[in-house]
Image 1 (tube, rainbow, N blue to C red):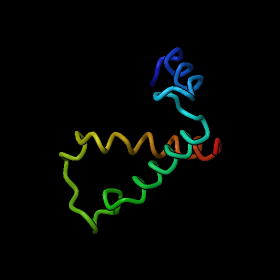
Image 2 (image 1 turned 45 degrees about the vertical axis):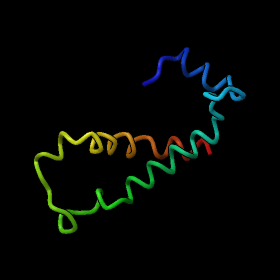
Image 3 (image 1 turned 180 degrees about the horizontal axis):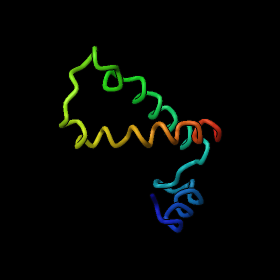
Length: 77
């Protein structure tokens, strides 16, 4: 989660090297979510070995974000 002031700065400063065009930002995030959700890491158990150690994997934390935010990003494209 980004502080509202930082979010406003990044979205308002599209001419800055740090600025983000809102529509392109949503497109990039949607594409990253899709790429992750269709990756080998997301395949079922018969395609990869499951481990209790995966719960601590930082990439696994992205699953919740990708699943819950994909539709939101696509809606803004």
